[in-house]
Amino acid sequence: MSSGGASPSDWLLEVNNLACGYNGATVVNNIHFALGHGDIGCLLGPSGCGKSTILRALAGFLPLTAGEVRLQSRAISLPGRTVAPEQRKIGMVFQDYALFPHLTVAGNISFGLRHSSRAQRQRKVAELLDLVHLKDLAQSYPHELSGGQQQRVALARALAPEPTLILLDEPFSNLDADLRRRLSLDVREILKSLGISALLVTHDQQEAFAMCDQIAVLRAGSIQQWDEPYNLYHEPVNRFVAGFIGQGGFIPGKALGPDAIESELGIIRGNRAYKWPAGTQVDVLIRPDDIVFDAESSLKPKVVEKTFAGTSTLYRFKLSNDTEFEALFRSHLDFQLGETVPVRVEADHLIAFERG
Image 1 (cartoon, rainbow, N blue to C red):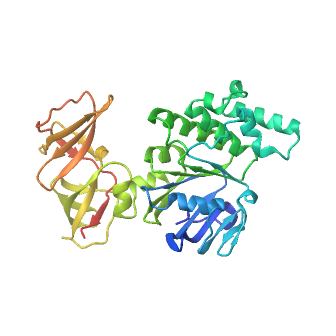
Image 2 (cartoon, rainbow, N blue to C red):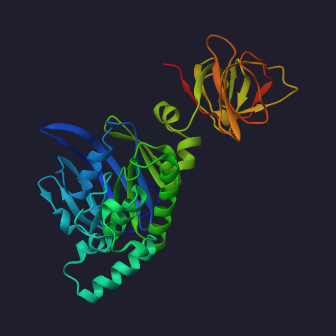
């Protein structure tokens, strides 16, 4: 599941055939991926899929039952041999911030620098306070800060010892949606400016897409696809990834050839050639951005649901009992429930799977 074409020296982090769990029960198995120097990766999936278990194994908190973890070509986890967490040069940022309430912002950031001289500590803390835009709050205590400010302190504390890799465990989940989006972009900018690699755990796709260069989609303890966000959206390797990533739904169809499918929405063509024979029953993924308004179209589905979102409106259309799909139109196209609307399919990426 690692990116192809690169030599081992190109990778900062390599995870090979990793398996681990709790109390003798395997939670994640056969995990493969690799993260490049300066890249931000993500473990994305629904609750209970094993994301945090993998992160704990990478941090050294959980022993492996199979496989290995290598950091800068050095094996740091093998079955029966685990380098201690504090010796891995890995920083960690938690969901609940985990700040020391009795220490100031400056004190929290300098906590991991106890073996440095006072002058070195002061210089490093000043650099990080400036980097996370908190230099005016150096003497404040955690309870005096907002959630976003506390998370910035947690990031600065993790960065202080100059780690090789930062692990971020659902770091923005306690924040409201708008702050979460802004802070995720800020954190990406900070990490990129320092050239520090990171691995994020989240169930939030928008957060993953905004922050990360590579994303692993997990299901039931295994990686379904490790890829760039664009490819996960447009070239999913299986039905789970196709349904999990982004919005959209499947409609029934019949293959006419390797790159054409007949459906109630008409003949859908795309950029992909499949190997199934003509006549194969398939399900086609239709995303909201695959449907466009066309006043000349003879295809006129009925509006059964609408969600206004300011600049756009998400419509759910129905053609029959078997065919419902969504479309995202600019909000000045204002259609009412029960109204029929002329549309056409404009799907540049053909995503379909044989019906099971």
